[in-house]
Length: 181
Image 1 (cartoon, rainbow, N blue to C red):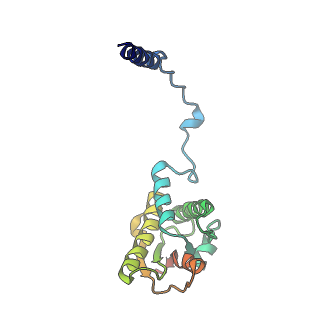
Image 2: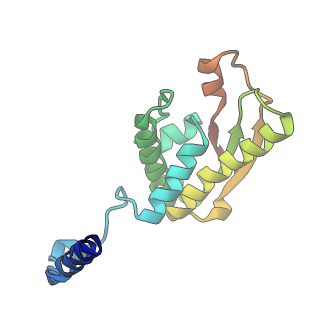
Image 3: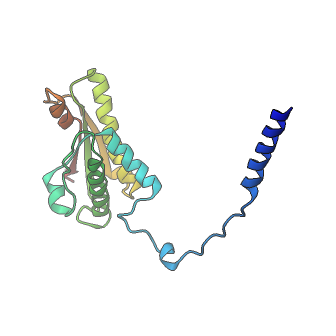
């Protein structure tokens, strides 16, 4: 009986202490907080789309025309299992999306081509390459680029040349190319 009373009082004390404080009033938003977010700051939805694209591919390569026309888009150097890759990847996609909306690529279309390393079945790798390319298209779409301006294709393992982990990491990528209209 003594044990039951001790447990009852302990439970009651915990319950009462949880109700003891009143919620803090919300702070008034400053004028700066209501200003539009700069394009380099991603919304949660945009961040999730870019993270999915980053998780689905170890590399991203831009053709020379895109690198020339969109200053700030860099071909990222990807380290195996490194978060630095994601930061470079995100920034490159943000800059590319801005370039497609208001810059030199305004009105132009892209082709994203997914690749896979040679491990696994050929059909699986072809589908995987397609999912990688589509993840990049989805990320660009979430950043305001019309999905109809980004074509998706896959080469699967066809162009794979790696024979070890370092080479396979280079095989797992998405090539982003300017479509000649």
